Image (cartoon, rainbow, N blue to C red; front, side):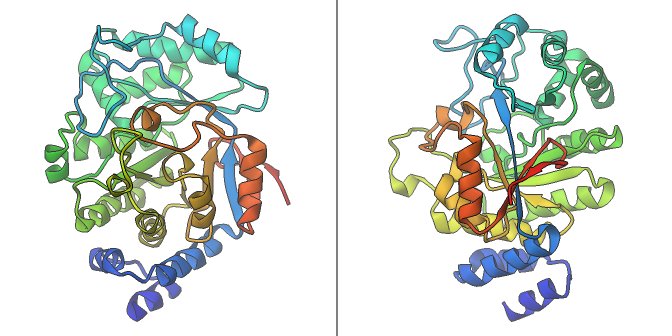
Length: 356
């Protein structure tokens, strides 16, 4: 730990072995302190949040990932595919003037053409021209490529022309072949996930990226996942934020032993901050770890508290017990309570308002 501390304080890059050592250590306070030092160097005491809405056009999906309770087959009870008009009616009902971003993800629905996904974006952008559209995961872009016969670049160009401005980070899960086989991740593989983001960065899009931890993966696989992301960031500098996502059990009635511990969740955030020296922000995702643990995470490497969301569905279709959304006032209170400075941002981390 002393050697790692010296590396961190000298600005030296940590290795796979260093990351594995940190995961196997029970010295959370030292790990958190180091992550806090790195974060303060990068971001000072500012913690960012955004007024956003999560939208889901369809939950019909051809993939059968073992961890997902959101997906449905066509014809299943609860399966849906909204028309652009239906989504606009939903947004009209729930939006408020402060919303700056639509966060859009959903199923890989093979029963509608690629044009459906393009027109969904176009309709939203035409109705809400001032709201940034952050839409689709790399796995969805790969799916669109397969159903359309277009390259990743062509798919992205069509979506950008319709109003797409950034990609979401989902679909990464754990970037390990062994993990993806065990968890039946029958969608974009490691290289495809990375290549979609590489292509997006080459087109000038700034994107997000995630890690879904806490199931069958080893700590070595978690750290290697971060190294895959770090290497691509060295190449493109296109990732804005890394988001560790705590795996949710299938049922909200699942007991404590089926959930990641607070210790593991804080360690994931802190180690992410230490390993990913070339990514500006690490997000504490309150949907998966809860608001109080998010507050603690702000002192252990996290510089982003996500956003208002309005109504989250994917984690809550599994066993998430957290709020499905949060108000701007509560986010500000939460950040200030950790001794940090709340900063309202846009999708690209431009500062809108600082709450001193």
